[in-house]
Amino acid sequence: MLTLKLINEETAKVIQGLEKKHFQGAAEAIAAVQATDKRRREAQAQLDQLLSESKKKASEIGALMKQGKREEAEQAKSTVAAIKEQAKALETEMDEAQKQVNEMLCQIPNIPYDEVPEGRTAEDNIVVKTSLSTEENAKDKGEEFDLNITVAEYNEAYRDALPSVAGEAPLPHWELAHKYNLIDFDLGVKITGAGFPVYIGKGAQLQRALINFFLEEARKAGYTEIMPPTVVNTASGYGTGQLPDKEGQMYHAEVDDFYLIPTAEVPVTNIYRDVILDERDLPIRNCAYTQCFRREAGSYGKDVRGLNRLHEFSKVEIVRIDTPEHSRESHKEMLAHVEGLLKKLELPYRILRLCGGDQSFTSAICYDFEVYSEAQKRWLEVSSVSNFDTYQANRLHCRYRPENSKKPELCHTLNGSALALPRIVAALLENNQTEGGIRIPKALQTFTGFDFIN
Image (cartoon, rainbow, N blue to C red):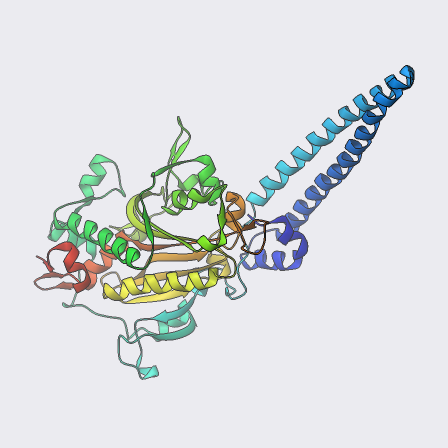
């Protein structure tokens, strides 16, 4: 959550940032926080004054008793008792005000960085890079270059540069999965329900190969592998911002008050909840493979067909804890890591810098990676890589001690999918289909043990 220091020292910037995220009633919400915090501080000042007075009176009682001034000593005792009652009332008022401030802060999203573009919907996101090219820029197809155009502008400019696969009518992945007996969606419905597919044979092997490939690439990039629980308590959900914002999207085990994780970000980042780190140990780089669970309430239509949107899926997540001075460099390194994975998988991709209105509740800046599906004629999001600045760390009480200071400061937290498997599998099947079967990218063949599915 936002810090009171930031809100009080840079009020206009905070309100402007919230408005960029299209947070309704930004000025009113910030004013309410400040007013409630002012009430807490005023109560604190009164309490400090009373406690000082009580201490002074208490020190006088012994001297009065020694001097035989019993009546004055008793009056001093009565005064101290009255002050204690007033102090209790002020402490209650302070606690209530602090609770109200925390509750209000939890309802206010993070503010975006300056480079986050204005915009309300996904159409306003900025395409900053692609693996495709057009005749207009006189570059060979497949060569990457930097861009700075909206998604709508990109879709128009790159209409003729999109990749194609063998055959006049490429099959979508759900038909390929059935044709080659890789995934059984109906069996998943029988066992659990829609959105819980069953992977079979080479389909299961492909899943396992991707997991091992992603973990091995993360290891080589300096990430320490973690194998965390896939259920977390309320404090963990609160720490990374899933609660109370996304409570309705999480599966809740009510008897034990546990939540099934929507991403490994939650348990891995919470390792550092209520921890003070040494600056020399930063940045911390962790990765984890987990199953992820999302209710995806309200999803329907073509966007949920096949592997496009599941309730349970596999994902490898990368997480960093860093200093404020170095976190932007960490973010760049994470983006380069994810891009490297897509290059090795030989998938056509584009990188988007999300606009304010399309960013998540907790992120300060976020880049999405999308791969193209020729069969579906659409782009599929496969990764989001975010820097949360101090927003999560403030909720987690995740701090570090600078080398030249004894006072702990808030860390920056970052995470990204590297990668989410369902749409990667969909893209691999669709973009690598041939008349004789499905080709496996060279980088994966060591992990699959086969180079073709037929």
